[in-house]
Image (cartoon, rainbow, N blue to C red; front, side, top):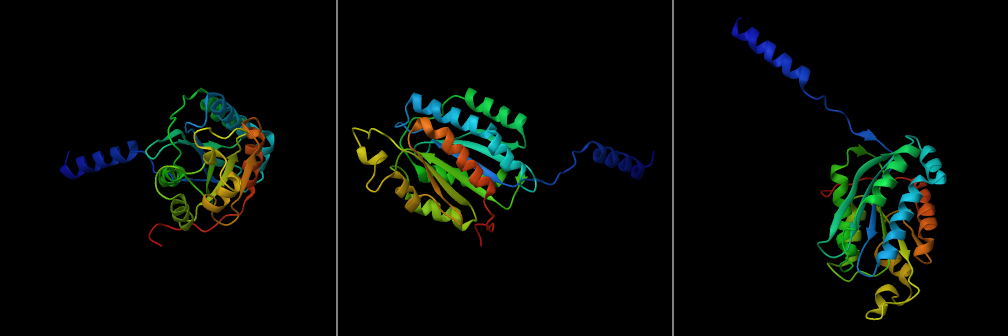
Length: 246
């Protein structure tokens, strides 16, 4: 067989077995759920948080909101954060398009071990969450970080700087504050700052058009608050996406 013929056969074989590049699948929302697991969140509160997220994703009201959007699907990445260098992807980008995928996501979340119990670096959590959008295997005009926590930023760089950098990239940051009935005895202003934790999140954490903060009166009401928040996030209007160079 002539050399050119052998080359043709080899190249053809390589093309046949090579994986075909696929365009990123379009979804209605890329959502990072960024959950506080700092040391002020004890074991009981941690479990309530996990169960609240898992139940909320499968709630029929949330699934109906997802189905009402043009693509009828969203993608979620679940992150836990604590101190300056304590952030972890618990569940990487996962498509949610109905009861089965939502239930599977919730089951994985319940079974995953706790990541940290360190200080509270909201800024570190935001920075880590922003980085997750770069490798999402889905595409959307809407990118949102959902930060839940029970205290103020007490580690890492200024939280408003991290917030402003994310907003400049076209990312919306919403907040869910978990109010504490009993302030921490060693640092009461961490969970109960002057003016209230919700006001702190409004001034320092939330950002972008249509951004908002919701309150869970305590950890037991967390699940209902997450349901309301997810519905609002799914229904929100998109904002322009920018790159770091723009």
